Image 1 (cartoon, rainbow, N blue to C red):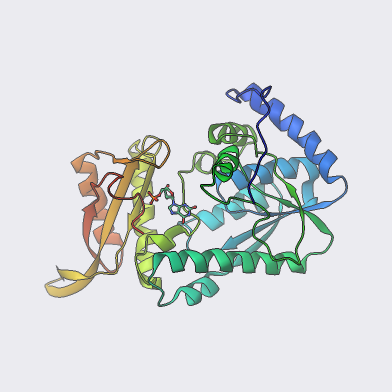
Image 2: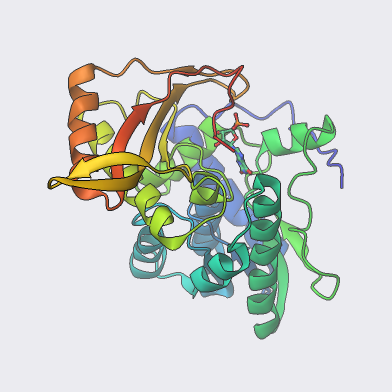
Length: 328
Ligand code: XMP
């Protein structure tokens, strides 16, 4: 479905807390008018867009919003816990948490082609969400974190973005898209004003297939764990050393490759961890961040000490183009 909506010319760029507050007030009224006494369903990923939509709807309609958080087992360390903490515990959201890790990892077992992996993850995500939606009754609205660049890309034919969520025909909902005319920086401004934590509001771009495209080739649970643990160390060190807010996107990759090493006097065959840290504006071009060597060495030591099955650490110096940001 190609989207044709146009952001009203009269709309101010939301660049202050005051404008963010005005937007929130206006949206609460509009959402209440649209939904009436109805009920709304939302797939809550933990990313900033769906989190802002959830927080707006909680303010507007409270527990007539049902959020579904599907954990596909490919999220970063601590992310599902953060979604539960912020939405269920703090905002008192009506949150259904589905741990579908086994289903996703079983479906992905032995699949090494990156596009096949993406397709399996995308399709299973819709299946799991649709199963949850069918269990609920009286829901007539589907909320989505569509933002203005999604609509612009859809219009330009770049992506067939966010339409009806790709749900099967038996699930028909009216869409509810309160941030569809906002740019990313405006969504962040609104999220901050709604009181969402900075780690959610300023979260770096994270691919839908998650760590699945950073565990190169056929995903195994042990190698996925090496991706998750090394990523957590990188994030912690970047945060401590002031790089987290400066570098556009950073993560680790573990290829399906073993090299010879030595541990406690014995020969080993273990994986390398590749660190990727790039700066970009629009993800179309990217260049690696020059990380100080002493910090790189410290991160290396922690990864070699703390991550099971790893005996080498590499830093990816490649710009985009000719490399892409992700490895697959
Ligand atoms: P590449 O690797 O193409 O990545 O240079 C550009 C940006 O897109 C993100 N990316 C994805 N995001 N689903 C997503 O939602 C995907 O399958 C996907 N693949 C890459 C990537 O993290 C980078 O920010």
